[in-house]
Image (cartoon, rainbow, N blue to C red; front, side, top):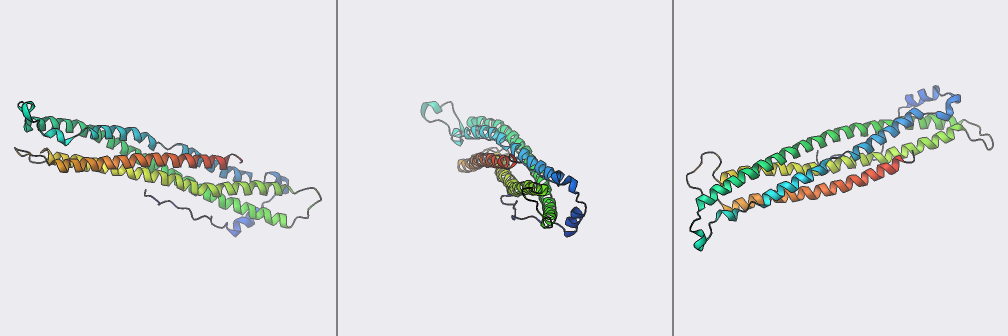
Length: 280
């Protein structure tokens, strides 16, 4: 998924003329009061599926993982590698501090690796949810085409109908119901895409965090003499350690902001889908 990958052009395909002819040929005046009800119900069901999917986003649960990772990472201060000065430094040394810092790093790396694995699972869940929404979107678009075919067939019947004074044809009411359902379906299509895009943006930010954890862990392992052939003497590059840590902290903060924005967008989408569904 990528930001802006899901778009809706604002129109549905035209119904096939042969399909309209078939509906017209099968029309039964006795059933005019319930004309196209299965088609209308199918469209409503797909709108309900979209609403359920909008309510089912769980990326916000990743916020706890980000907060934990940030707390652990923020506690890693390369300044701790520098021995104390004066009398306090008599029983202190760079080697002793490096050993202690390495152990702190190992513990932090384990926590952040677990967090990255959890985020990876949530990203995969978002991808599955997006695929499900693709199916809902396609089904709703197809339902709109079928609604349009029935609306055209009903309009054809009404055009040849001689109205009786003060007695509306049953198809008039059916047309109103089909029009309302069609308008709701048309409004729901871009909202489904909006839900997908909200997830896509958040998932992209979480993926950047996972990549950042890998880069941070590898970079710090190298800087602390824990990667590959280990030198006897290590003078960690504090600037590099800080740069790698701060880069990952920035990614975490951006992901947290994106999750907040995603939750807000999804709540708005849920409310609008609910408003579309209610009158139906």
